[in-house]
Image 1 (cartoon, rainbow, N blue to C red):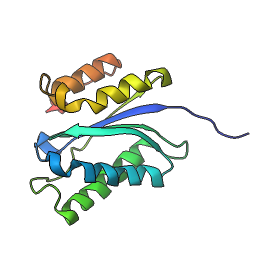
Image 2: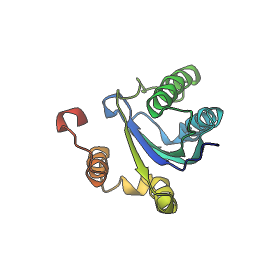
Image 3: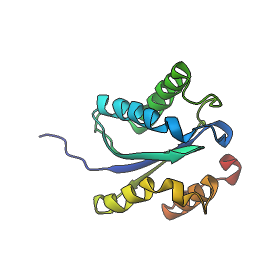
Image 4: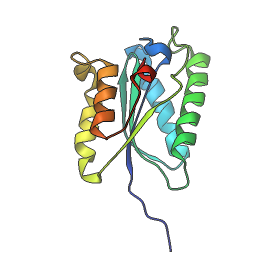
Length: 148
């Protein structure tokens, strides 16, 4: 028997200390690079977007890929890429943790639209407020001291 899965993830993580270092002009190059990482790991990218201090990735993860290992690989490789290319001069790295949330496949289009509209969304809400809302929406217990 083959393995069949359909697990839609939204992965969210920020720059170290939430530094607003991801300048808009170079984000698309970073997104293409991350897409390449996902593609090489047989994951399907539906949408990637973000603002100055964090990223959202909407993806289906291949059954042979562990979520934590994937996020670690993306962070390490993209940090190296950013520094080698000089994409974001103020970038000092990614935060230690991440958020990962699952969605029903029927929510895919709404989720893609949400991630696509990050610029407009963050005119009214901070990353911290957004992350707390995501954690609460998904019933994830958290300690606010780790959100700083």
